[in-house]
Image (cartoon, rainbow over all chains, first blue to last red; front, side, top):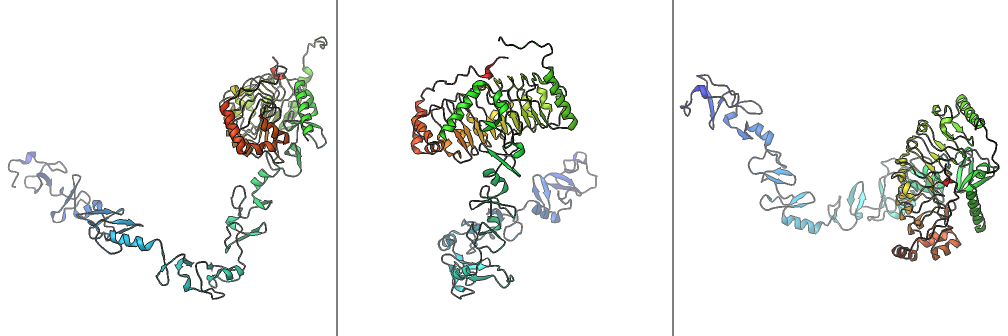
Length: 340
Length: 286
């Protein structure tokens, strides 16, 4: 056993398990550390290192495979482990040879790159793309660049001149309307393009809110047509979705806001007055809630009552008011009578 | 007092037995609404069996001589309406504000000099009537303007000189009466009460109104705006002669905004107190 001549078996211990060695046992020596052969294994899979090759990480030794699985970065392009130089860019790791300009394939590792809409480009390509791009659309049919607005059809963009109106055959432009469904037609029969003139003549209803054609469910109310989701309460702007609405002066309201704004909310119970309404003093009451504000005694339509702070007080209560208060109330009454 | 009635040795028994009868009847038929109006009651402890009526929703005690409200009344947890109008109450227990269903509380025509700390904790109170007492801004508890559920607040015939800016917290307020107080200013925050439909400011010491009032919907045919009996600056007084809606139009004008900011800068002394309140019944000593 070379190299350990000065040591004796008594003061030699395995680095992993701490036990001593048998006199005729094989001992592994790695950089001065001693191991049982069974202890000198990968920290992850506990198997002997193939060809004795191991990788060390934070004081622990791993076989090549486990080291890569655990710690080596994966290339964003080829998916292989990156050993050696790692390029970190665009939120990924790359082999230096895999990180290339997405336009011209130039290796970018040393040349540098520019991020252009989530693509890594070399300086030259970036300048070119920026110059001629300017968000132009590419026609799905001829792959030429579209100047101005594209015609949209079945989710793609086209030059208008590739199409003509399904009714009058006039050449189309971006104002053409795609009709996806029509009453009385199966879905495959339609999905055609029309010029604006012909489209308007087809009688497709226009939404009273957004002024766009309605091709799905239609709500008809207030003498207009509406997209279901555009027929909303004028106050809270929530769609009615088939729930009852209340009309007033050409506007529609949900139940809550109609009554809150125009309705008869009972002054006592704060609920919508169902049935007969008692109206007085700028307020409304359920008939059975109309009562003296001082003693809660019910008042009928024929009861005489006095007004104090725009609320009714029955005669009996009024007469129990302090004299000086009655005098002031009388004066206030005279003031309002004089005004009216 | 020369015409005093002969002294009776069994005071009030006639009326008290009536109160007892009302309670017994209510128990028998399970009546949830109790009327004890004008029964000569001086203390609620004299009404036998009242605290056992935990199912009642309304208790009306108007026109009695009650001077203290026992805290135990808060045991009547189903109360929605509680009416103490025209009694001799000088203070209220804070426990009332824990009544979980109380919607309407009427303590008008009493002798309240203050409100207890924490009084603003009512969970669902909608109408609070404190008309004709001896209240002012200094005796309100800190959380008074936290009663967000409040629809109507009646503070007429009290002694307020300033309406606190926190009134702007009462987002649901539809009615506010400050009739015949001593108000020398109202806050801009009043303009935040977008649901306000009734505003009584008559009989105060106001010179100007914040321009923000002009944005409130107080001119419609369902609204009430009472402004008479103040010390309005001439342009407001002139518009008031034409009607409250003209005042609102004027408050919205640029001319008025300038006048208002100049007025604030000049800080003129407040007008004198005009109402003689010494005769108020709320001032009586028990």
